Length: 501
Image (cartoon, rainbow, N blue to C red; front, side, top):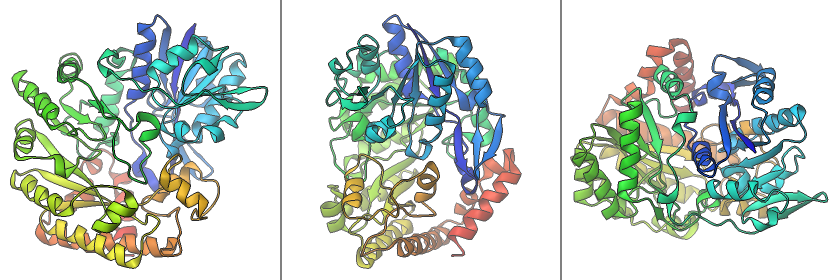
C-alpha cells in the first residue's frame, strides 16, 4: 500500500499578504515517519513549497502553490493507494477540499483521509464532501497506521469519522499517545529542507521577524494542555493531559537538526514548554552541556506563574531571544469565570519584571471580545495591557475567533452570536485583526472592532514613549530587505488600519 501525504496550496486574502509564509509541516512529517516505521511506502508532497513561484488570483484571494494540472501529474506519477491531506488551520479549510476533488479525478479508488486541527473540530461538515473518505480526529501517527490496516472496518480504530451507506459514523473518542518517546523523529529526509530554509530566508518564514538564523526549525517537546480556556482548540488534537517527551529525546532531535541540517534557531511549539519546570530546566541544561550554540523561542506562550528565577536564568543562558506569555485578559474575574484560566495577574506582572530585568524581550497575548465581554471588562483589560507596556511588555492583541470544536464556538452557536452561519477561509483570516466573527448583546462586532484599534493605539503609544525602536518592528525590516514593494504595502495597511482608525 502506497501513501502520499499532501499539504495543499496556500490561499490568502489580498488584504492579508502578511500571511504568505512557509509552514513547517511537522504533523505530516511525524505521520510519515511512523508509516515508514510500520513498513508503508510513503512520500510527501508540499504543494506550497514545491509550487512557490506559481501564483494566481481567484475570487479576490491569492493562491500560492502547484496548479491543479501539476498536482494531478504528481499524483499520477506517485500512483498512491492512499492520500492523506493535512488541514492544520480553519483559515485554510477551503483548499484541502479542492485537493480532494483533484485526487478523486485522478482515480476514484484512491482513499482520501483528512487530518489536523480543523477536521478534528469540525468533522461532520468536512465529511459532507463526498470526496473525503475518512477523518482522523486527534493525533494521526498511530491512528493512521491502524486505519490503513483496517480500511474495511474503521469502527475498530478510535477517533475515525467515516461513511457507511451514506451515513456519517464515528468510531469513538481518539486515543492519545502516552509515551511520545516511542514515536520516531519527523521524516525530515522526505522534505526538501533547503527549500524551506531558502524561502524562509527571503522573509517568508512563519516566524520571519523573530528567527535569528536562516536555518530554523519548529519542534514539539510535549503535547496536551490540562487547562480549559474557552477559546482554545488544541484539545481537539492534543487532549487535556500534559504528555512530555523526555529531555534526552528532545535533545537528540535538536542535535540531529543542528548537525545534519545546520539549524540554529529553534521554536518550541508546545502549548506550554514550561509546564514541568524541572523537565524544562533539564532540557536547557542539556543544550549547554552538549554545547549547542542555538537560539530559541516558545512562540505559543508560557504561563508566567511557572517561570521561576532559575528557569528564567537558564532561558537567558541558552539564548532565548523572546519570551511570550499567554495572558488573555486583564480583568481577573473575567479571566477566571468567563475564560476559565487560573492565573494570578499580580504574579504575572512580577514575572514580566523579572524577565525584563534579564534583558529578554517579552510579548503577551490578549484576546478581545470573548462572549461576556463588556465595555467595563474591556477597559480593565486594556488598562492592564497598558500597565504591562509601561514595564516593557509588547501586547499582542487579537479579536476572539470562534474556532470549530471549542467551548466558545458552542456558546456562540447556541446564542446566535456568530455574525453568519458558514465561515470561509477568508473570514477566519480577517477575524483576528480586521473583521470580527462574534457579535453579542454586550459587545457588538462594530464595537469590538473600535475597541481593538483603541487598544492598539493606547498600548502602542506607551511602548513607543518607552522605546522608540518598536517602530523597527512595524517597518518590517527583514521584509523591506527582501521584498520592499510588498513590505511597503503591508506597512501602509498596518498604519492605516491600526494607527489612523
